[in-house]
Length: 286
Image (cartoon, rainbow, N blue to C red):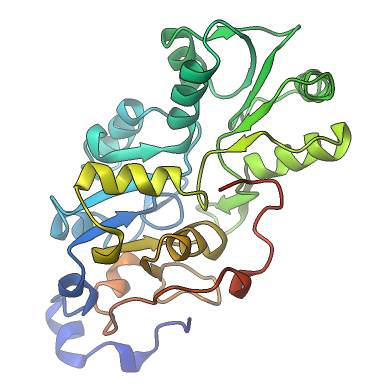
């Protein structure tokens, strides 16, 4: 991919603020990432709300967010000036809890995660414990303690399967810095315990994309993925045969912001080979 240049934007479009992007009419449906694509640490990016309004009824937000439920995130987005209904959000953390609640009902679960997600897990009937875990569920916990790392490492070492919400090592912060993500902790546990995760749920794995397509009643061939991360958004799209556009400061980004993306001429990149992006995560499974 190449970054957007002045040649990608027509003078009339810039002056009038109109949307001339080819991808708006080329694709019927859209799967849109959140952190780094629409927002950075709770701050909306330029044009994000307008892009969502333009795509109303044709998009689902598919995010590796592992701190919120769709309901709590919808409230936070409203407070930030973005209207996204809970029923059009597919979130890695919530999906992981749903999966564990279904596949490991009644088992003792050591869960690393936010207070919101832990409450959701308890409401789903998950038995959350500090010791003697039969399953380790790994999501994002910004109050994470060393003692929890030790407990997780030893539970995994004793044979408890580790189920991980998403493999991201970081996401962009509002100040331009990096915010450490779950993948960093996952690799620490793997390195210490010497055991790979049993399952990684979030992007680039297909589960969230497939659920997004199901909610839209869409085919992959008619759907464009809009994200910011080549290793999750673009690779995940490629694996399912979808086109993709990237937002942000990454060298492969097509535009810096949703505002600039809405005036991009081309219709999205297709079917990138996985090797284009190198190693994504040796421990995730399709």
